[in-house]
Image (cartoon, rainbow, N blue to C red; front, side, top):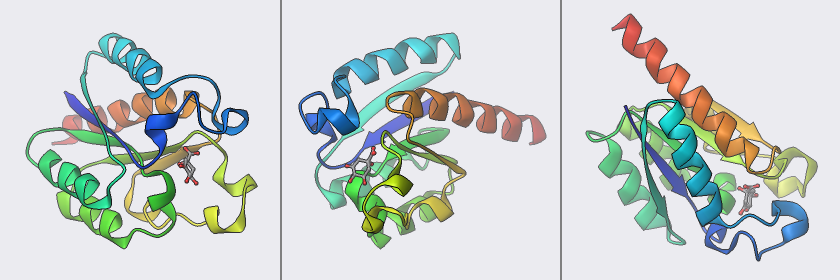
Length: 149
Ligand code: DQA
């Protein structure tokens, strides 16, 4: 089983950016932990980060015939990118959305996610734990779907 982990804008600055909100771990450290967890879960993980909406859309498209599911933190695009939402719908893959901060506790513009309605689920507010739980949940969803096929 293959999972693509995709991170949106500014998440390359994790560990240095607003550490009171996002914590001290860098994206590389979170990815290393996800790679370890993936071994336990017997799946493969690939990582991609971009600050550019079109590159994120292209990456989601490239997943269509190459991976079984996507773990996605769309970052600020969560709140307004219909292009990312349409890309998620188009690839017909299970996608789990994750956020390190609790988007519902923050500014009102962060309360809405335009991408969550086309994802299987959303994990928000658990820091780096949102990625780890999100990966576990996604793997479970994919396994359940494969059993049904
Ligand atoms: C975020 C929440 C978004 O509102 C914000 O724009 C981010 C990070 C999170 O992981 O908590 O960049 O997706």
